[in-house]
Image (tube, rainbow, N blue to C red; front, side):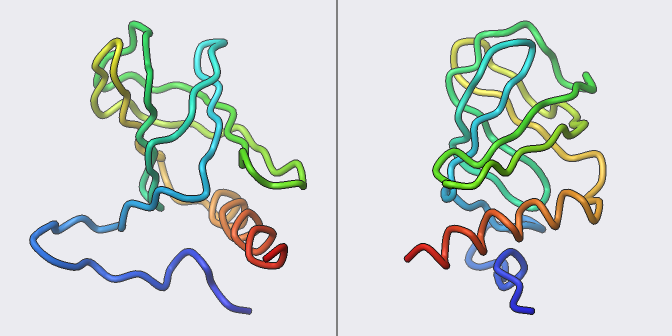
Length: 116
């Protein structure tokens, strides 16, 4: 099976463990509000337009869904707040990249590429 999510390498001055990807866009429900991802990686998500009161270190559960897929790929994930700027964005880190989360991303990519 081809892996769509692990074929990336760290490039340039940025020394992140996981490369940030802008697509696909995911919708994320956090504290009853739905947001869209600015970018994401296998380590976490950056969400735009965040207007809540969460702070760094909080652990929360989110509902994540692939926004532009015709199939209904969604799941609940526990994440840790890394940084939150109310009115701007919130950075969330996965507690661990479980096989379920990895499979979720694989299914989202596979569905996206087979429709092209």
